[in-house]
Length: 116
Length: 111
Image 1 (cartoon, rainbow over the protein chains, first blue to last red):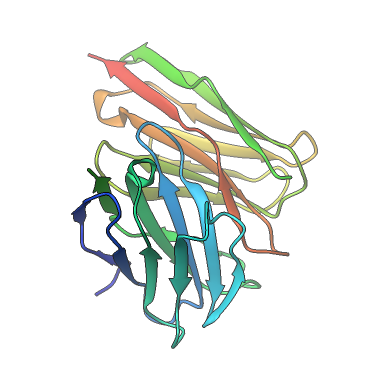
Image 2 (cartoon, rainbow over the protein chains, first blue to last red):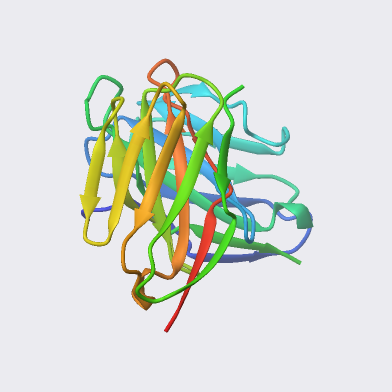
């Protein structure tokens, strides 16, 4: 497809369950970002990849959060032992690499995670 | 640490009026973004501003950037109800590609 695709769109998890969220970036986009957006708040940076390299994971809130992008395309955000405070919309974005003048980041529809 | 502040956070205005949303950021950056978000939807890119003095316009929205003051503005001209949404300012740096968002301005335009 032409845009960033995320799946699932909605996920309900029981507290303590592990979840995996998928992101398909725009074809050819080197940079990939994950953000967490709580209700009524702005997106908070979680982590960033350039190709398969995870260059920044400073925003991951705990060691229960793990992201990977093994082949430099599709990325997965995994949350282990989910807690209620993990409930949020998880947004993925992709962009062309640094050095391109118009490094616009395009966002997917997001995955709304509800932990019950 | 790069921080982005928007004001106001909430804005209710009449159709036909003009208003400005302000975005301040704390350290030197290379790109300034404006996004729109409708309830339950993802972020739609409106503008990317790259240089001091940059001005971009699309319909009733105009964005400008003053890198010396670390300030960007989003000006709304003759507002219409369809512009009701949350508007986010975000800042990016070439050295780490991280994009940091403000808290957003929730705009409600009354008919």
